[in-house]
Image (cartoon, rainbow, N blue to C red; front, side, top):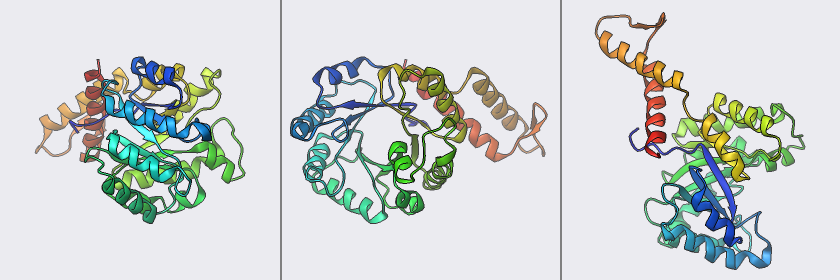
Length: 287
């Protein structure tokens, strides 16, 4: 996992706001989603498209993974967005409301026709009931698919559910998306927390997301970055435990049953420990 890319904090930024794009160069998030969809008024979308493409191609964002969220399939802006984003060569193109494996295939074909470089991945937003029910097929549809991004606001809306602390109404959907993503070996990024002023609630949801297994969280404001970075990074204790477990396993290899702190150690524990250390090392390399 030496090429592991942290995605603890994935910040939406409106591409129509020049000051926001400039400010994003100084924010300590792991990834940016330069938005052409919800955050941009219809008459501003062509200019925002040009601005996002220029930003993604500029190389001015340092170690941050720069992605572009295009307008949805079937909208009047989608095709031009896909061409511009593909040619800009961002880390990924984020597409809202992806609902089938066939759509993934069509999106990948559009990226390739437009000349998207090999490093540009597709991130599919999971935010509808049909996407959740077909999540595994979507996740396995293309090797170019690099992540699921949960669109929890739209999912709550389409389920006729409510936003409540703990997210009980959508937990089955979140688990289903996680299961599919892990089965396909892609990243899975949690949805946004809407109330920027509710720090306690936000941190609790970050902790919930980390416990569930998400790689990180999408964010709506820069002030949420620090909390997400801390929540989705392995703790000092987790790192020490991982190092100790791996050392015990390697020292006891071939000697029968291996234990660490009174617990039996198996290959699955070692794999988990190595992932923890890979995340820790990747985060430390960010400086």
